[in-house]
Image (cartoon, rainbow, N blue to C red; front, side, top):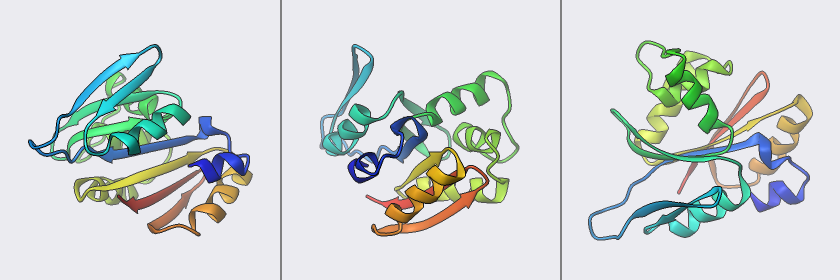
Length: 159
């Protein structure tokens, strides 16, 4: 994320979504301070860094996926899909949020499966130039897959 920021990628175009895979052995807590959400738990440093860089954060309990943490514009897409009843058959609210910005349903199903298996999604939503620039940096990392959809790039990674 820091490399993307240093490369001039607008942080307002980035979103990250991941399953909260805590165990009962770890103290977990969520709270807001000012306009930022804070997280305690074994992945607190991981999520805390994103919430400091990205705009908007949320915690969702998603049926068939579990507890999910999200940061960036994806939060508004998910909430908008839920409020507008844009839910698409067979996908979660997260999937409906991704579908609402033009990501094909078959890819949405793939991304939901990635979340279920404790992977995370990094979404870049911007101009073709921004998406291409971000792709160049992401492809130098340990990613599982990278797909481009019109104005969105979705990278699936492992924690």
